[in-house]
Amino acid sequence: MNDLAPIREQQTQALRALCQELVPSNAFYAPRLRDAGLDLATMTLEDFTAQMPVTTRAEWTRDQVEHPPFGTNLTYAVHRYIRFCRTSGSTGRPMIWLDTREAWDAMLDNWIRVFNAAGVVDPQRVFFAFSFGPFLGFWTAYEAATKAGHLCIPGGGLSSAARLRLMLETQPQVLCCTPTYAIRLAHVAEAEGIDLGKINVKVIIVAGEPGGSIPATRDHISEHWQGARVFDHHGMTEVGPVSYECPAEPGVLHVMEDAFYPEVVDDELILTTLRRSGSPLLRYRTGDVVSAERRSPCACGTAELCLLGGILGRKDDMTVIRGVNVFPSAVEEIVRSAGGVDEYRVELFAKNDQAQLKVVIEAQNGTATCRDLERRFQQALFLRVPVELATPGSLPRYEMKAKRWVKLADEGGASS
Image (cartoon, rainbow, N blue to C red; front, side, top):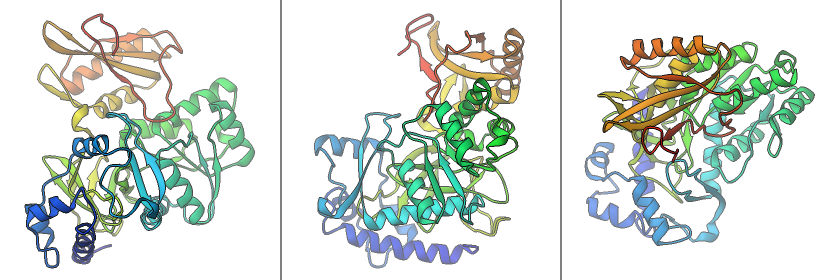
């Protein structure tokens, strides 16, 4: 997709067809489309943007609560759906998503684009280092790899040490996991006396957290894994796989615009799913904070939307500390750039009616690393951020999305 005009034409035709499919039977969107007053046969992307209201997570969450178990955002009878997935619940209660065979196959094609962009084209061995559960990203990644002809090695139900031993036996060239878990596996390998160089992983595809596009985190992972190239991508259960990393510029994600119509409003990514008619989202406020740019074309040859630095944070994750907007991704960049930090936690609390932030770390050089980090926070954020040392092994380790930010009731209060 190296020209924007064909992209826009394809999106227009797909959007018209999608909306016309929804009006007869989708109880969630049919009234919204009628109220918008759109001529679905002739509408342009500009018409759609101007007249169709956004969809929020709160709206479809409330719909599922009021119409259990699946809600009303279903275009077809339930027997047409063949896949059940559920959100992780990291931003609220877990919610259900159903997909038809056609929509599922489309998402597998999206994931194949993620593999292709990472250079995973010829048949390779791919290790999936996560417990599968009901989460969409795990299953779509695994099934897409099988569809593309790769040998897929599932690591579900195993300890970290057992996964590493299985990797030694099977010799995968590609590892799929969260950024946090790639670091965790490296630490376990060190503790177990396992030489990661003997596994010979060349590509690590990460998702689930912003870390894959944070330079210091990428470098941290690559150093531990003997120079393996780290590729980021992002998606959500409710929309599916969204982006792939630019092959020509690390840290830049491209939105797959044959599957999505993206908008960016006040730095927030808004998505319309074009190939998921059974359970669509129209103008969905993702909550993802991005810096978007159009290139004609990008150095990699595509005209698809660029997200510079990947997902920079989430609207609901931003914390204001003494007038400074602080995102988790900014803290992660500072912590990882210091080096020598095995794990960390960020504690939020109130003092004198003002929001405060403290960082607790497990570090190899102890007090020296704490002081170095305090200096780095001051330089980068213009904030005094206390950094304290934790007992080795006392902070939680994560396989899926890390939950390093905790809120305290007040200074010295209990964690919520």
